[in-house]
Image (cartoon, rainbow, N blue to C red; front, side, top):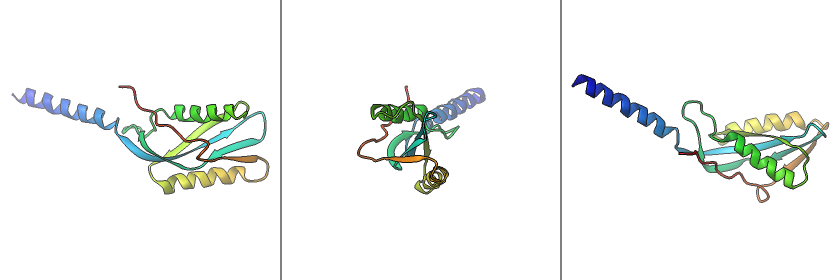
Length: 131
C-alpha cells in the first residue's frame, strides 16, 4: 500500500512539472539585427506578447530562435542583406527596458547606422510548443 501511495505521489509531481512547462505567460521582448557586411543595425520596439511560452526549468523562451527568424525574414523582405538577429525578453517590462537601453547605448556611438522597426510594420507572433 505504501509503495502504491509513493508511486502515485511521484507520478503526480512529474505530471505537474510537465504541465507547468507549457503555460503561456506575458513577456516583453525586442529584436536586434546586425549585419557583418555593413554598419547598419536595427532595433524593434519593445513589444508585449501575451501568450509566449516559458520553460519552467530553464526560464528560456520556448522557440526563441523562431522569434529571431521572424525578424530576420521581415528584414530580408525589406532588403536588409544577411541580418543576424537576436531576441531579448523578460517577464517584467523594466528588466527588458534595461537590456534595451544597454544594447542601444552600445550602438549609439556614431559608428553604426541605427534603424528602427516600428510596431505596425513588424510584430512578433507567438510560437506554440508542439504537444
